[in-house]
Length: 224
Image 1 (cartoon, rainbow, N blue to C red):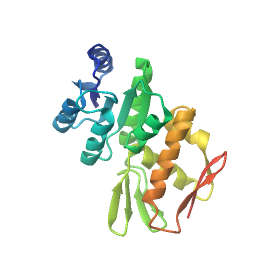
Image 2: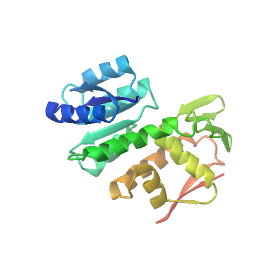
Image 3: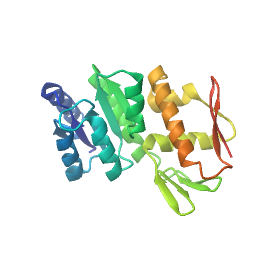
Image 4: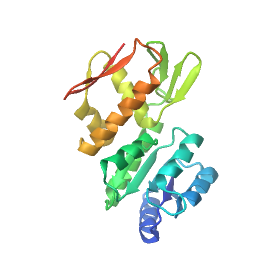
């Protein structure tokens, strides 16, 4: 039974979401601010974190930064009424995996949670270990290794790199990967994909033989 840590400073909304998730079979731990949420994270080791951004004591972005230091892989979904592009990009840069704007439907929230949890369980035993230039990529463990140094990837980073590798030296179409990993190809999701590509480039920068290039208006290509 998946464990969800829900942090929401509006008690009425928090209880509605908590009850809905519990009814769908999730074990839900609830906190009303970032400080309490961080304590709940340490106590319960949840499978996913669903957090409001604007909260008292510690905002969701700050809390996510602390969580990422504890666990680089746990999925984090932000819930927020803030819709500025800079806020969305910041959420992903801080290690967020998804960003759902208020008001939202409970059905959409549950579908997104299930999508974020799925890569942890599906196909883990069947994914091969890949060589990407001088890097070793283990998509099942979500690890990228180079010269004895190991980098832990988020679920979406690992899935994106796996797709790039499978189409290495060919174009990975942007709208295709957005539909597969984000669920739709909206402008905001397109910006978040750009952030993820930037992260992967940073992870792969130590081998000059490996590049991720933009194919303008089409997508991306992993060149090895």
